[in-house]
Length: 238
Image 1: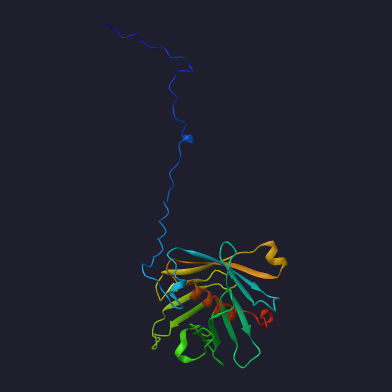
Image 2 (image 1 turned 180 degrees about the horizontal axis):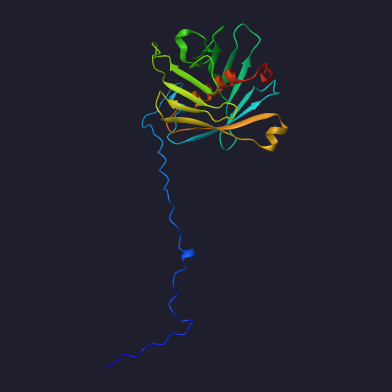
């Protein structure tokens, strides 16, 4: 028995795909970005209480005209004050102190006099005694077009290889902190400019600290970065 031939109207005709509607596959597929190294154990420099198992975003405000509350204010994403920085520049040795919200000294930073590499020393609390040294920071070379600093922990007495390295552009606030000579990122900075920050003469940027990395240590590094790269005209006298 012959099968009936089905007649299709124009509206019932099967639709042929429009070549222009077929999504085109990209010619080149981008390579995946390597996932950041997550340290299973805390990397503590100043104290284990500053090592958290998740990324931490801190907002740092450099206040050019402040003479009372310190030149830096460091807050979390909810604007809770985490640290502030007090500077003392009228002395033989420039000194900066990282304070907690209650004003207790966490780290004291000094600079070596007449150092071509602008070597800085970070000590525990309010001390400047050698036995309380936490780490040192210096330029990797005397002349630099971009920021390149070596960080040596106090236990690294030979200083043949740095424990951390800071690279990038301080002007653009795009510096990155690496573990040693590797490409492993432990923290990175991002510029954050707002109308309010410009009107109030403030320099605002954000630093993302990776999980289990001592975030007080990273803030202390940024204080040293500012000291090395900052202009004398914008320094605060406390």
